[in-house]
Length: 190
Ligand SMILES: Cc1cc2nc3c(=O)[nH]c(=O)nc-3n(C[C@H](O)[C@H](O)[C@H](O)COP(=O)(O)O)c2cc1C
Image (tube, rainbow, N blue to C red; front, top):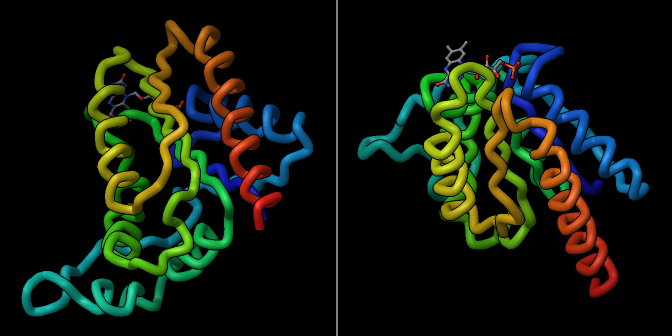
């Protein structure tokens, strides 16, 4: 599988979805395989920080002990893709709750896994601030911390607001093209 577009907005129509559609169209235009998921459609429980010093089996085994939700399925799914586009609406200057809840656990499982298939994988980070437009930088900063711990290769950070969305579509398309080039280059090398 090639690229996964991860949305973290409950809305089927809106700024986040405009970004999702722009990226998906750009990927499809290049005949690139793409799958979109929306984290809000999954049952994801919060991290229990279950071990004695705040670490559970996530540190050594790189999986989560919580089994009665969709986390493991999503972890496995995301690991099977060659590139990621992460798109979150900005809520209170941060990623949305569905993004935070999932990524808190995902980061724990993948961060100190030297064998993680995510290492070096390209990611595009997009923050969609549909209100005042404040908080994109802070939201993108959290995404950059995630990318740091997961050793992802960030292609671009894109701050989208109601006021700049039309201009930003060009940036999204260019970044998607870069991402596709990287994935295809890697495929050729392998
Ligand atoms: C709880 C909550 C907090 C929000 N905080 C911000 C914010 O800090 N900055 C901003 O520009 N918009 C904020 N918004 C607006 C959302 O970013 C905007 O409504 C979002 O883009 C709408 O979702 P959509 O992208 O799916 O259309 C907030 C919305 C909600 C529901």
